[in-house]
Image (cartoon, rainbow, N blue to C red; front, side, top):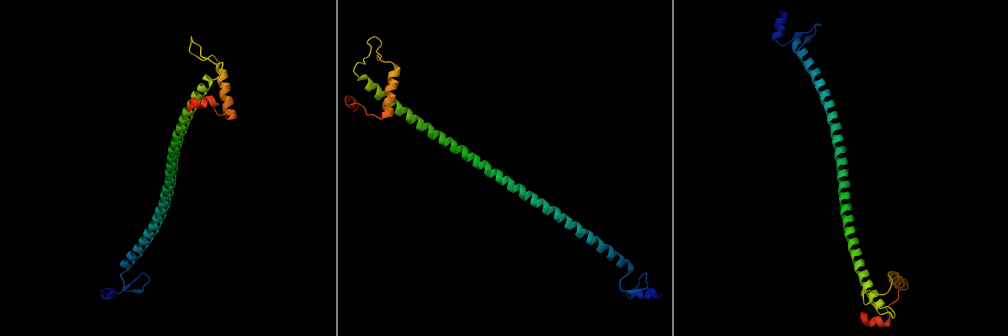
Length: 156
């Protein structure tokens, strides 16, 4: 009966017969809730650690992907520059071929004016050996000689 009167006033006795303001069942539920909250906070902390590790991993992969992208761009640019270099080299070689053809024509003209070198009437080809032409060309290119005076009039 005394417990009922105290219970109506909001006062309760616990298992140790101490006077409490809260009902022992509410106190027990409060303790359980507190423990559950602590477990929840611990799990949230673990989750944050896992997510943090995942974010670091994704950042690292993004950096590696960016590095590979830059390497690919560099390789593509290198290939483009190599192609341009080859094109420039091809143009240089074509210009050199044209120059050599002109030099060959000049040398053929020089050879046609050399005394004792006449074309054969039957074949209409010069009466000299191809090695003579090669030797003459080498001789001119090594010594850097200019065409003779007689050939200057023909050239120009």
